[in-house]
Length: 192
Image (cartoon, rainbow, N blue to C red):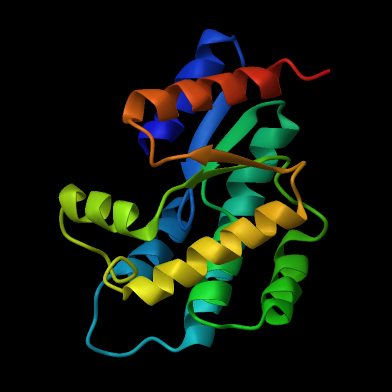
């Protein structure tokens, strides 16, 4: 969230019209689904239930918020999108990628984000930061191996599509990460 705000501030300084949103969430209905997904619970959540809820929230978010904003000419900064589903539900939970792709095509058609900024750090670094933020959500309570699989899935996706992915070393001190994000956003704005 710190770097999302940093990217937004950079766009504002450059005079770019933008909106900030998040997934799951981004609309009142999608935020309600987010609450279902993140709340710790005694009842185990079936992997397919989790996947379908992610895409239910995404369908609402995409069609009532993201696409209208893009059509009006605004940039959309979204904290997570379908790449996170491939990482968390695919890599983390083991849901086959072809099932995720089917839902991606059903919900999104041919729409894909132009750019993905991947803030990459070792899992232990991320877990330490999450613990310092406060109470952990249902995902943050998972084992280290879950997050190792997520990280590897993100890195594999980045390697497969380097023109769309921009990896920032998030293990650096905060100021260095912030400067890298500012440079990256400025470069994207100034692309021909």
